[in-house]
Image 1 (cartoon, helix red, strand yellow):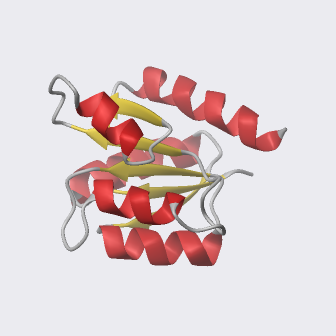
Image 2: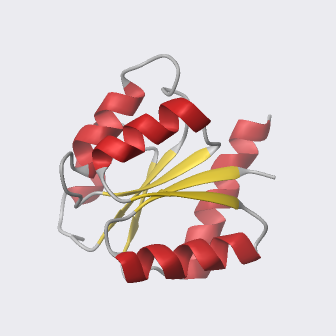
Length: 124
């Protein structure tokens, strides 16, 4: 069973997405800020991280940079999730270390395709 760390500060979004992922057979852990994301990722070493970019304490951009900057977590794929779908945001997310990017509101089938893509790479 693949482990996913879902980092989302909006409780409703966090609960809805975690339930949908759990129904698909994923072991989902939750964090609601960037500092927790870094700490939990270091402890649990998830197979994939879904990272909201607008977070309290440490935002998703900085948390992604931190995770990609240390050997223990640098190879964990990070999919950025954001409602701020402005021109250049995808590139900014990739520059911050995210491996992929998806916009909110979440289109679950599209997100699942991205999750499957990255987990196939991890499983090899």
